[in-house]
Amino acid sequence: MNMRHVVAACALLAATPSLAAVQWVGDFESGNLNQWTGTQVVSTDRLSIVADPVNQGKFALRVLVKQGDDPINASGNRNELFQLGRTEEGTEAYYRWSTMFAPNFPSADEWQLFAQWHQPEDCCGSPPIQFYVHGEELRFTVSTNQTEVWRAPLQRGVWHDFILHVRFSDNPKVGFVELWYDGQHVVPKTFAATRANAYLKLGLYRSESIRADGVLYQDAMVRGETLEDVMPPAAKPPAPDPGPGPAPTPPANSSSSSAPQIASSNSAGGGASAGGCSAGAGGPALAMGLIAGSALLQLQARRRRARARSR
Image (cartoon, rainbow, N blue to C red):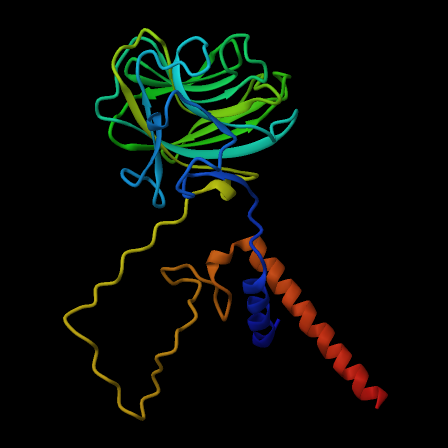
């Protein structure tokens, strides 16, 4: 493949829509709660959009629960969002979100759920997937039998990042979960009855015996088909040090050029060598773009030759 084909393929790739399969976003960047199916809340001040603190973008959700908050006349106290759909039998998905517990978040020898996937029935024991605080620990359990698969110390005042990989199924040999916490793969694929048609709830749901106000923050919820789909945007590298002043202007007959240079394969940026596209396009997509661009140019060349022969 010559340089002309590479350049054309890169142009074709740049014009191609992203192949990422983000299925739903509930990150509050709309500035309201409209990304979600609905709320279970006693008053609007319990679930409020805030500009500080945030973990990603411009907005996050502040959750407040007071003793006695019971918007659905059920056990416990709560203020939660919920999202329905796309959890049928055998459905597989990745969810990412961030949670921060306020510095004065209560410590109690009771359950305080901050994320759950609830069984389709509004009854019948604990949620089949639940993340909660107990005392000074974060815990993660699966199945309505509350099988614990992970725990970690509770840290207040900092954002924590969660990525959950799940297959929804009533069959404990088909359904599974997998978890990344603060960038670490902490739960390998673990089979359990995760329940088909479960629905997501995010906020705070806790024992009614807890008296102190509970405040936490939620941000950056997204659902996708693959781990790559839900990964957060890459942090921008720091700007280079400009140095003591501008570089001297080269002589008029200098061979140097201010045009951007194509990165070599051994550069710090890890770009493609010898005229390749930006590495940010991703390996599979880059390969598809190069193949498609080359094939398109070859087809056009054959058509030109055919027209020339017919004249």
